[in-house]
Length: 235
Figure (cartoon, one colour):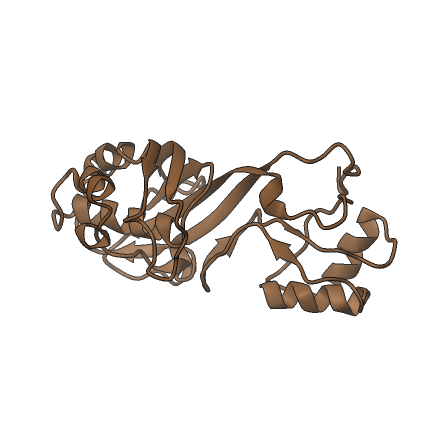
């Protein structure tokens, strides 16, 4: 997605700086609320940026809102929290309509175990065990404010289960490793308490599967915009 957005920016303003994103997501992960900033060299109102950029973006990428911010502002300076949703399809038979939107699981799943184990994620912990080997950050303490299991897709499809995780920040692959671990506990592959043991040991090997990317959606980013920022468009 970053390359598509960068290309659209260059098409509108060839001398603009590259986009700076607020979250690093794997290929296949969906994003409804990704935030990015860039330094423009031409003066266009927010409405103009939305309409102009979307003319140069593919059908599966869209700028939904824009506003002016102070120069050289990085999104990480204004992000106060993020919410992810991971969708699981509980079905023995594949469903083409959910192919790219949910992780299909055909084995029996104990959702009560998912809720109990997931509750252990909530709080401020060292999540060093819950990250990809490609994540080399030294500071691995994060605060998870909410873990919720939601049954149904909002339209009556009870086969779909959403695992909602909300926190101040996340490590690379953290949500996918957490969800894979919850599913492994739910099917009895891991004993309950795996989350607590991993937090204590900081050892990735004590956790379970890394859930596939296509079930994950970055749903929302909490922002604290500076006073100098303009009003967004659309309002």
